[in-house]
Length: 307
View 1: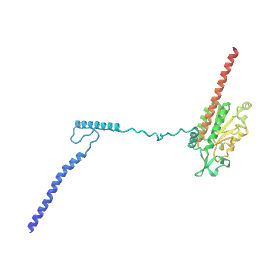
View 2 (view 1 turned 135 degrees about the horizontal axis):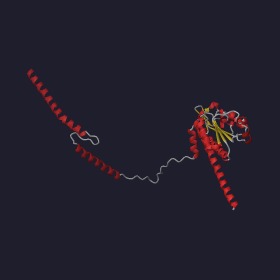
View 3 (view 1 turned 90 degrees about the vertical axis):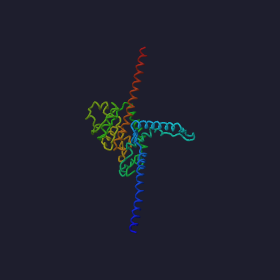
View 4 (view 1 turned 180 degrees about the horizontal axis):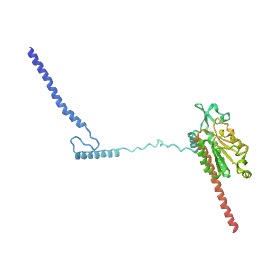
């Protein structure tokens, strides 16, 4: 029994082990064939065992086939024509000059004021509201005021008046120099105010400028009026109108023509003084054009009189 049991166990072991070896020997070539069939070379590549010439011809044929299919797809795609009932898409309308200027003022930070606890009582009509503890300036009022002030500067320069621009902060120097260049001999720029320039002019300029009043400007623009109250008092004493960029913590009545805006922002100051100086430049151009027209008419009148 022991011998038969041992023989049966041996036969069983040999019977189960031989098919397994046969299965492994069959599965290995299949796996290799599947791996070779799933292998895809890169663009311009070759299959294992493929020569360079064969790979080049095969890639050329594949490229031609891809182009042929692409042309077929392109020709069979229908052309989409939207129905007439569907409204055509419209682009964003061009902003008006008013909207554009309001956006520029807003981007420059002109609407930001000081803390609402520091707001001057006389400034309340120019306040739009409060935000994060700050007073927000109403730019819908700032814009028409700025336009009226620009018209004032244009008319003053057109009448051959002198505009004095005062900006005593460090960041004001460059912008007031540019404004002076636009106004040429009708404009002057002051980066530091000397007390008594207007009220004690004979000490600074002598008696001759006092006789013809050439020392006296026709309009003074202050970029930081709250820091130049002494200069504003001198202008008031000499009956000189003033323009000032007034912030929420300042009484707007200290100047003749207040422009409610953020005085602390250099971008706002540059925008305002640039607008006013360009308006003055336009007034100067109109004055010179009018003078040239009168000169031409005068020469023509002289020719007719000589005849």
